[in-house]
Length: 63
Length: 63
DNA sequence: ACATTATGTCAATGACACTTTACATAAACA
DNA sequence: TGTTTATGTAAAGTGTCATTGACATAATGT
Image 1: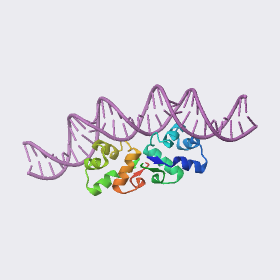
Image 2 (image 1 turned 180 degrees about the horizontal axis):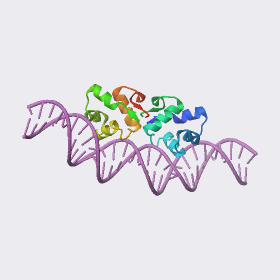
Image 3 (image 1 turned 90 degrees about the vertical axis):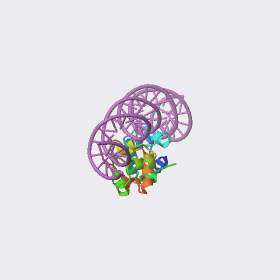
Image 4 (image 1 turned 120 degrees about the horizontal axis):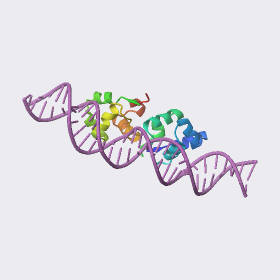
C-alpha cells in the first residue's frame, strides 16, 4: 500500500509527532507508515481519514 | 468496526468459502471478520472493496 | 439412514501492528 | 558553540491478523 500521509502532513505543516498525538499513536508508528514499513490497521486508517476529512481511498492506494 | 459482509454475501448467494476463495484468504478469516472477531488488514479491506465494487466506507464503519 | 454443504468455533503457529526506550543525524537558531 | 526540533531507525515486548487442521451442529438432498 502507498499513502499520501507525508504530503497531507506537509500541507498542514505538521510534524510526525503532532500527527501522532492527534491519532493517539506513537511517533514511530506515523513514521513507519509514512516510510512504508507497514500499513495501518483498518481502525487507524479510519481515524486518519476522519482527521484529514478525506476518504480512505484518497489517502491510501494499493501499490 | 462493523461491516456489511454478511449482507453483501447474502445478496450474491455466496458461501463464506466462496468469498474466501475470491479474496485468497481462509474460510476462517472470512468467518472471523463477519462475526466481529477481528478487523481485516487494510490491504484485505481494499480487496473486499474491489470485489464488491463498493468503497471501503460503504462496507466498513467504526462502531 | 447417509452424505454433503454451510457455518461456527477451537488450538497452535507465524507474521504484522503498535508500544516504549533509546540512539544518530541534519537543520535551525540563540 | 551549544540547544532544540524533526526525522529515521533499532531492539524488545504485547496484542492482533491470518493461517492450517480439526471438530460440532444444522440444513439439504439422495
